[in-house]
Image 1 (cartoon, rainbow, N blue to C red):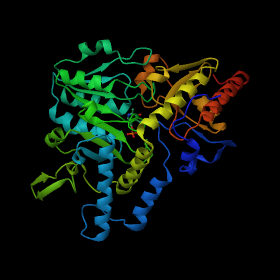
Image 2 (cartoon, rainbow, N blue to C red; image 1 turned 45 degrees about the horizontal axis):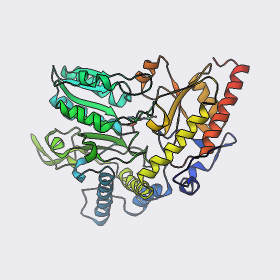
Image 3 (cartoon, helix red, strand yellow; image 1 turned 90 degrees about the vertical axis):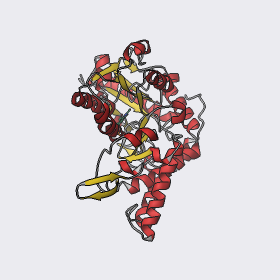
Length: 417
Ligand code: C6P
């Protein structure tokens, strides 16, 4: 029985998420796959619908009423996002498709332009592929050296190796604020400061942090921050790159074409001001507008309360999960993690387990979660991951545990190995 305290009333919140009110395979849906993508509240869907129904037009192009209105709401959403992360200026927030594109923007613009043989890029063993592969590619192309901070078995970064790994050769330290497998909340400010001490830039992957905790880029001091709208109640296909203005000013464009230029002649072109210099072509207008509504929703609740709520849920879920015989949970204790937990159960393959959980209406993710090196570290190919958000309730953790106990019984009667 849940005896903790919830800072939010999920029954009120759930009214805004009709998708949650359904049965799957004859059981009430327990949506525990929020780290992959969250659900969207009615206000976000309405904002997108309003754009298409009432003022659909391209932005920054038309001199007509609809285009002006679309441009205004689109840019106002940027202001909301900038405020949400404490960015000093709207010019520092670039619309992208997702965290992956944000990181690739930095790799192909800053990395390709700045890295050279002898330079080093430092990542960590707990990164999502989106913050590994672009740097592997960029190091290959520029001759720079790719290095990583290992993790220890408890799911923390080997901070003891930081002094050794961060040197005057390091030009960029790219790391996640929260691991999408281990849940580990990294000491972002400490890592940013360590990078700056040796003259390196710091890129924070906030895909699993921005939806779940207060973020202030001024406080962290990071040079770049990447995150996705779809994990924080917003539409899919909209993401963000925060970058310090002086850096973005010096970086060459990433994609080229319409809207990112000031003037184009047949054999030359000059670039638009920030942030539009990095926004080539017609953007995801509806996505940005929906994101404005998502930020409003989260701000109204307050990110401190979001974080507290998830902490209470994950603490309870991990206590209950520990009752399942043969379970192994990966990563630190609840106090040091976000609202997700990845685990294995002896004798049942993660994919089979997720399939069984689905028959009980429980949606989880199984696999390597696009973070294969973390799994390599533990010598396993895959885990099952349950990830919570503001609308989840303790009873869903109970349902997960009950279904896991049933799965164990089933695995004994059927050979699931
Ligand atoms: N992780 C998960 O199930 P995109 O796909 O670009 O919106 O986000 C990429 C990304 C980057 N960093 C971290 C830490 C992430 O968790 C993700 C996305 C999802 O874990 C989908 S693979």
